[in-house]
Amino acid sequence: MRRNYTKVIHQLCTVLLLVVASVFFNPAFQPTEWRQPSSILSNYVVIGTDVYFNDTPIKFADLNTFEVASNKLGSPTGYARDANRVFIDGQEIMNADPKSFEAVFDKKAKATVYSKDKTRVYSIADIGWEYDSATSVPNVDARSFEFLNEFWIKDRHHVYDAIGDVIDGADAASFRAIDGSQYGVDGAQAYFLSDAPAVRGSNPKTFVVLDIAASCGTSCIFDAYDDRHLYLQGKRVK
Image (tube, rainbow, N blue to C red; front, side, top):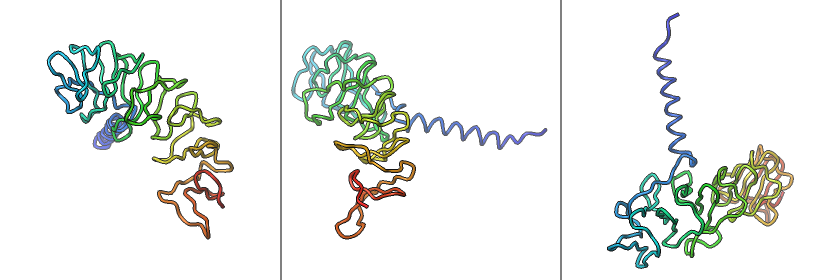
């Protein structure tokens, strides 16, 4: 039987493009790049035999092994390491493993408030970008850690809010964040990031989040809906 080689080549090219796209656009395949301080525009500089962050010398930094972290585009992250320590904005991250340490990026290759090594996940989410150092997020499994968006993270065991509090009842295997919103869904229901996150009575299969809240009548506003109800910040309004 004569083969249609044009069709075969087209199929192979399609598969190759999908593989390349998965590597470059999936956050799981955006490794941290480590560069010499002099090769990247960052606040880490070498003066003589010392390493500085802005105008402050970094204590105990090993100049011979010191590296600055960037994303794949070369943008600095604030993280740095040497053979013995990891730093964020010049401050040591206690107990972090420099060999396995990496920043965590979002889908646009922008550094998030998270980082991790082989045993721990670290966050600056609870104290913002002006801080003394990153702190370990308790109980999160570093090997299966996933950054979903700025409000939601998960591992193979649980779903968490930005500071590592477990979302009770949420199924980690099926949970997904809805775009950049405070809403998420699993196989059973929707969730909104709040003191009582479960959106009771919601249908995750038809749940939609609006970009801008809309009116649903006199004194009625909603920011999400499904085939059952209208919702505002996770509460049923109609």
